[in-house]
Structure formats: structure tokens, C-alpha cells
Length: 66
Image 1 (spheres, one colour):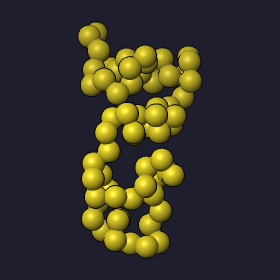
Image 2 (cartoon, rainbow, N blue to C red):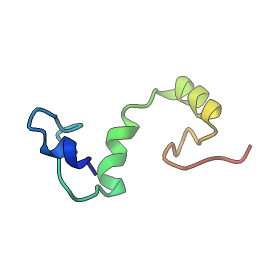
Image 3 (cartoon, helix red, strand yellow):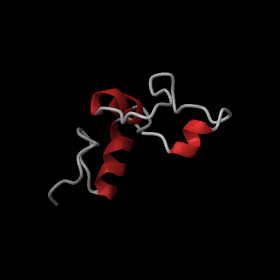
Image 4 (spheres, helix red, strand yellow):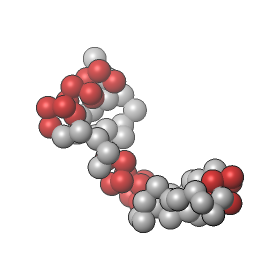
């Protein structure tokens, strides 16, 4: 969900065409593809995931067992 000030600002763009400015919260299936697309691929994703303690396969999961 966008902050009220961001939604009200006509010069503030949406994050993407798939995530338009609106008051309703986005469902996981709406926003996960956008944010997953920002992540690095393969080996670099594994390195980042390991450093952050998250799964490289399920990056939206909160943590993995170490």
C-alpha cells in the first residue's frame, strides 16, 4: 500500500505499471513478482540470501534455519 502523501502527489510515480497507486493493500500474488524481479540471479542470489539468512528459493520467507 502506498503512503497517503505519495498517493496524493501527482508527480510521484507508481513503483510499476503492475502496482498502480491505490489505497487498497496489494496481495502477495500482485507484488511478489515485481519485488522478486529486483533480486539478483543464481549464484549472486544465493550469496545474498545466505548473508541475509533467507531462502534463495523463497526470498519472501522471513528466515531459514542456520
